[in-house]
Image (cartoon, rainbow over all chains, first blue to last red; front, side, top):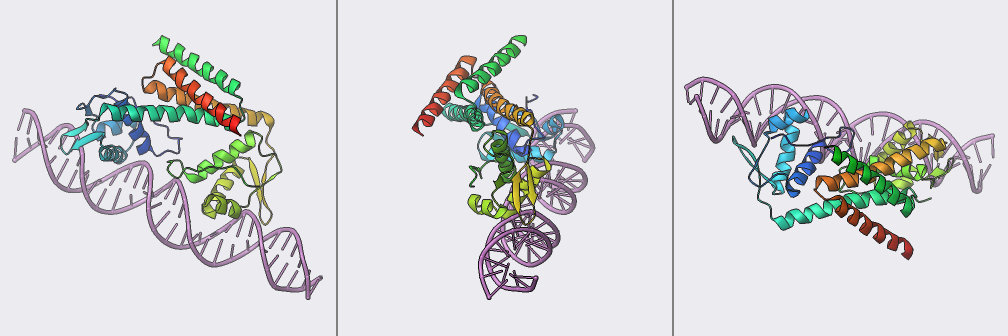
Length: 133
Length: 133
DNA sequence: TATAGTGTGTATATAGATATAAACACTATT
DNA sequence: AATAGTGTTTATATCTATATACACACTATA
């Protein structure tokens, strides 16, 4: 299965960390069920045009954190993660991302009304995009 | 003058880049006027508890991008930047930050109503914080 | 007007994190 | 046993952050 992962080469966040975060999102959001197999490090490497080593680094970290299991010679699989844990991570990640946006706007001296306006603008744009699908 | 800069050691974004981004924000948001002097690299180094070299790296990058001017033996000063340019950068940074928050929520399968709810919750929290000041 | 002192930015060398390629080892299937 | 799939290990290059030593510019004062 091809994972919907988007990397930003311009970002200063390490690639292995971007991959980690996005796979974690796929698991906590329920897009990847426990037991299902992840792409091999070579397959994902080819798909994302990133070296095998970097993919492996991301998988290693995810395994250490308990999100996946790797078996030599067989492949890599999504681990069993308690639903409560998934929910906890999900909420904190989303909350933090939105709060960061608001905080950034405040630092740039935008008023609460202006922030609300920009937010609604972005939201309606996303709604339209979703309709097109 | 002491700059209101907050660094995150946990973040995967390089420190010099965090410093760059925040000083850029202070300039484009109007908190730092053209011609005013920035803290010396040693003063900022001591303030942020970061090595002199890393501060210098950030200042170098900002100078290359035209936001500041450094003069050996004298110090570092905010450069003249066209108001239109400041506005342009400001808008794109803020817009991107808020859009990122919305996008993250969508990736986690939150509905538009839920996203709106979280946003309002964060906004009202920030409003209360501002009142306290 | 020398000059010592303090403040400024600059250059070189080193340790750790990040990303890569190539060679190795295990597993399943033929 | 051969082979095509998987993950693993080793070695190398670049980026990030640091410490240390240096050179330049102003200011007070002898």
